[in-house]
Length: 177
Image 1 (cartoon, rainbow, N blue to C red):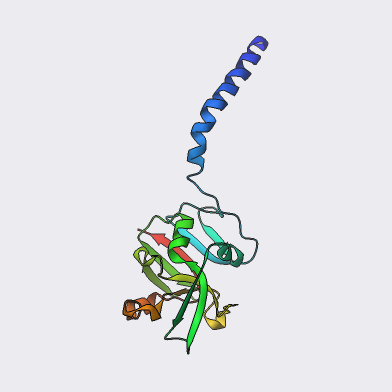
Image 2: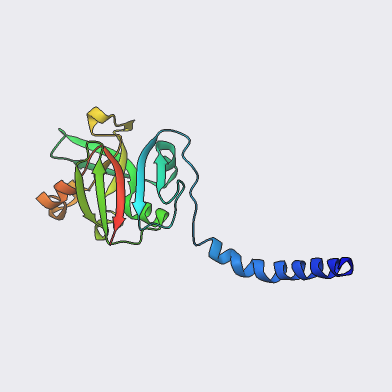
């Protein structure tokens, strides 16, 4: 048996050289996000590929700010005057987490829930805003996260349906369907 040990070691090395390159591409399919270091402000569950806390993805403000920022300058029906909202584009965010569904169930801190079709997540469309006029939004100011559409860009974003999807104090998303 001792005389087989070098043969066994050699066989294991050969298998490692052959099998490892075949397995590595599949390991990349289940992306793991970095764990949040600060307070979690958004938890995403459901049909997603990228996770960092069991089968969910948790984000702190710094993690959202690390994604490519997008600005929307718009008026809203809830705030006086025009404001500049900064956040991550919903389409970029959904790509980042590997969303696989057709609908988002968005839930606020007070459990208010709306459904947003993933088809709304287009370049130049809604963002998950984390700042208004360069400042973080407090809960009192509809923060810390608010789904903002480019309302001033055209009548397609000035409908009752779009306004109901503009959930503020967002803290949970579930990707379904």
